[in-house]
Amino acid sequence: MDKIIEVNNLKFSFKTYGGVVQSVRGISFDVCEGEIIGIVGESGCGKSVTAQSLIRLNPEPPGFFEDGSIIYKGKDITKMSEKELRTIRGVEIGFIFQDPMTSLNPTMKIGKQIEEIFVQRKLYDKSQIKEKALEILKLVGISDGERRYNQYPHELSGGMKQRVMIAIALVGQPSVVIADEPTTSLDVTIEAQILDLLKDLQKKTKTSIILITHDLGVIAKMCDRVLVMYGGKIVERGTVDDIFYNTKHPYTSGLLGSIASLETEKDVELSPIEGTPPDLFSPPPGCPFAARCEYAMEVCYKKMPPEYELSEDHKTVCWLQHEYAPDIKLPCKNREKSEVL
Image (cartoon, rainbow, N blue to C red; front, side, top):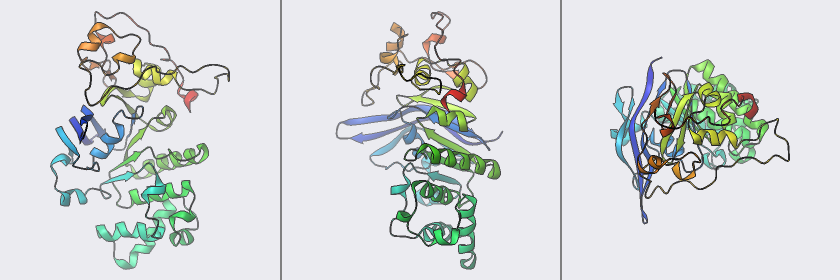
């Protein structure tokens, strides 16, 4: 498959009164045509900063690129002017935000908010705009489009508002859609509907999706490939099967072990990952997970491990893969994907 986005050694930080926060610390990955790639990790690991860096949504300043490149169709997004970025945002790369309650303009009717994108991008004649807006409402599963078109955001449910956000993201017929925890504020039933909608739209339009989440159940349901982030770095990457059936990083194993499955008895305690994430004002010289890892060795605290290639798709950044490391069998490696859905 052809690569649409190539991220190379991306480093993004924020200047604060307390010092420089190194939010993203040298990550590299690519996104191919028509695939859904998931970025998973706990809060503060850098996944949302990574997502917003892809179309320069992080405020600059205080944020700034320390190093790296984001290549989209041969051009480096990190070096684009604001004028160039406007031709990409919302047109070639769409973005679905976490909270539709605060992402929609409360003073504008739904139809006008969708039409605004058409007008800004000059995609259709004025006579076609309303018809196209109603078409896209239908595409995202909003019935009675004419009535919804004339409603304000507060008149819609949370799930309906998220469908509108998806509609706005798809207006420009983008090559890539970035979805930053799109189901965080929704109940389980509506979450399933929104995920099914995204999957269905992806199949119909062949759009690539970058899905940001902390929920491994969402990853199991949606994604082709997964990036596991911790402490501003990618610590494991692979197909969904690699991550669930052949876990090779203790952090990934910990994430899997902390999930309650359908078979979990009510009196069984979950296995949380003890400790706290690293201080990104002053990141550790070694593996960022070493302080919380039960398998940590002396080298883990002193030197960042290289990325070990386990297969063409599966790679991990962990000293346990070194030829001299002890042979550790990580728990939860055979957990069924269906158990976390």
